[in-house]
Length: 151
Image (cartoon, rainbow, N blue to C red; front, side, top):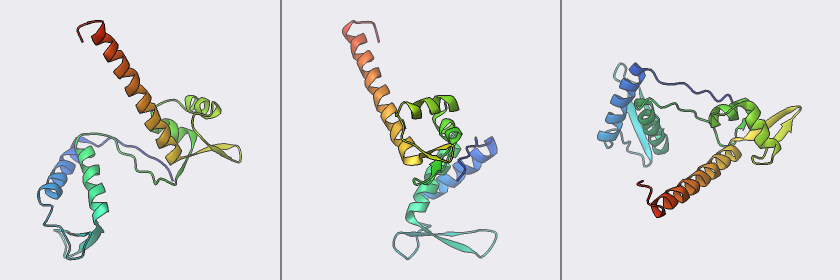
């Protein structure tokens, strides 16, 4: 599985926004008679497509991010990532990821001479990093308020 990330174009953003609005505002119009499924009908043909409700929910989230011009990467949770793919996701250099692996901050295993990282382990590391950053920022904000620094 290759993790690729692309920035949506302005045209992509416009189309995504219109599609998101339709799926959000007309949420009952695409419902199927079957529970937990959605039926999408294509205008240019008589074809329709049955989708699980969870897929429609994910599609709405993707369209929202695209409409905002945000990059999106879809990676199955059981996927193994290379150090470069992990670096791209974390937005750091590959040598920095290797350093994190060698320090034991992110679990990994070797496939031959290549390091492989489970996507879930990378997501867990990213979450712990966010929690640590938030705690540090909260501490600094509290300290600034106690010192009456005007923040």
